[in-house]
Length: 278
Image (cartoon, rainbow, N blue to C red; front, side):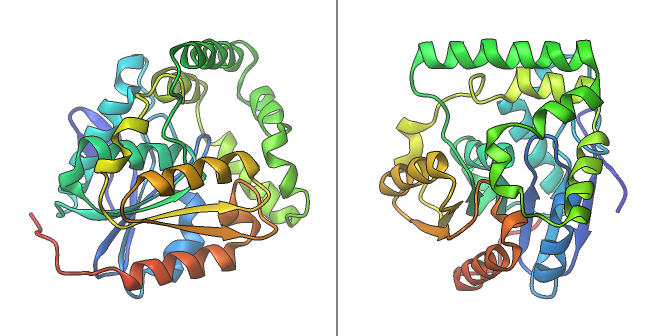
């Protein structure tokens, strides 16, 4: 499909299938290519709309950090949904994309039918903790700009969060690296500055008001995010948990079959009264 022009910003989107709309949001350093296998699974029953978040993939990477602020990103994504003909959708996100989908549910609830959140956090509750994370992300953004994309990708692939991916097939590892290398220094650096975990509004106090059906999905080996998801599931009135044994942070990569089964089962169980379309 043609790229979407949203308030002067170009967002790349890929669309497949027909049925109730499901929007897919990738993680930091990712792109729509993250979801190609999942799109093949969902598209026989659902309209799948995968979007490159600002600063990623084939979407624009503006030089102004303000365009990456989480609230601006949320508004742009809702405008993109409108541009493809829908007022509401189910939103599926991974990591950064999951944080974004949760923010969207908090600030633009009229656009949300359901949430599927993989490796999500509502943000950092303490001001000191947020300030420390902002400083850390600023240092990382500076590193990207100073050392270049390849050096950053080398570093990013070495962090402990991905230790559970040691058993991935070589072709999968190569595809992940190619996806990361297709980004830009400006886009990744400004993404950290504008919509990092420390920069976003913490949502702990707003979780009880997010009443749409929600699936909080984590890998059992991802102990940090599993604990966060358990706390969120207690606070959110219509949330359910899915824990995938033997998987870490990126369940969709480490056990794609279990991930796809969980997502498809959840979507099929929703009350899918036809949403209003534009």
